[in-house]
Length: 74
Image (tube, rainbow, N blue to C red; front, side, top):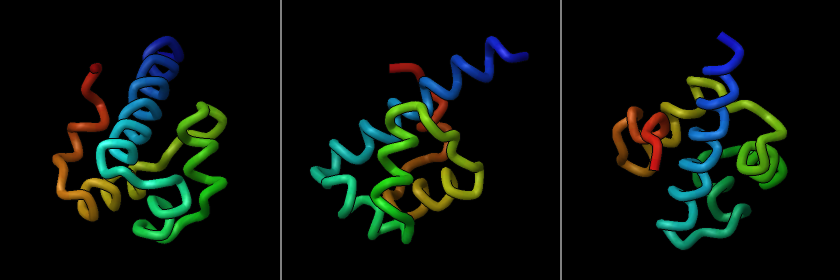
C-alpha cells in the first residue's frame, strides 16, 4: 500500500502545480482562490504535505476540472 501512496502523492502534487501554472497563478493567488495559505500550496507542491480529498474536491470545483484530473499521470 505504501508504494502506491507515495506514487499518488507525487502525481497529485505535480497536478496541483500544473493546474496552478496552467491558470497562470502565483502560489499566493492560487491559495486565495481556494481559501488556504500560500505555504500550504508550497508544501503540497513540494511533497512536504499531503492534500486532503476535501481540498482536492474544492480545487476541482473552483477550477472546473474533473476530480480524476489529480490522479492522472502526465
